[in-house]
Image 1: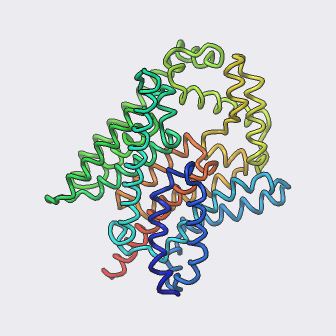
Image 2 (image 1 turned 90 degrees about the vertical axis):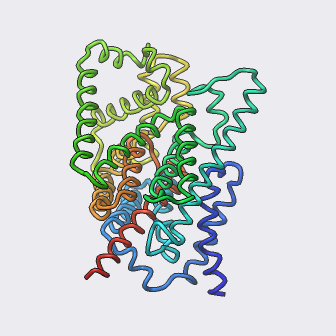
Length: 414
């Protein structure tokens, strides 16, 4: 029995990360696969496997979960907050379930196969979305790209998570390219091109920004670091200068303040920017006016207060109806933890990120994965969606595997 489960177990992981984008169509299958992993875990895990979890980042993330549970229970909002807390537990749970199949080298073995599953998952999502787009174009007789309803309707999953998946695929392919000639290099380069082109065509601004940030991060690795660091610092300085130039423009400031009533064209054409400008403004208002208690106001209450803010602050009836009906959350994981669970929750999450960086900072791939996490947490509540929890689980798996690989290499040298 143990041998059979040990053989099936890794393939369950591969299949899970292959079909995650199709969750809306085969919703029951990911749940079944997770259940299979949970049931089989005691039979396939070994005592030594748990040593892979002995790290400060994992301890900090575990501490975050324990705090969220205790805090919500004693605050009397456990039933309301458990839905979000469950997704936080799923992210760490996937990393724990992965330890029986975690390979010593994160770029090969089963770890490499998980990365291959991500690549094929992204390609399948792209093919499905393009096929839908062709059908919709044929049915409507019109052709429109970017943020058009035509594109939004054709995407397999939300644009933000599809952009994240394509970013994963690009990063994995880039890392897999050999310095010397190898036949597979052509396939990886083609995959990078396909995913990058798809990101541009579906106008995933967050994915574009993430790729730019990863490009800057990459300058700190490899040969001739001094020149690369100079280039990266120059690019960062240019962005900072541009930010302050824009900020100092009084007309721009005025247009932002009036965006709730009459948004300028460049904001009106970007629903992503407009949405977050309003949501973050309301979140800031809650912090300033309500004096958030030390233990937060709860995940459910945070959303309720945001909805109340939309109702009172947005003058445009159609826009107000859209925001209150969809009940938009904070769209920032850091803000969400602070508002919903207080300063300690935010601190524990930041400690997890900082300790993770310290443990993998010498390796580009895990550092890049951590960068993706930070960028997306700045614009999305990743723990409010099941797919977000799954992909954050993948990031934790990558971080843990890379940290263990580095630790094993040090042990061999010593």
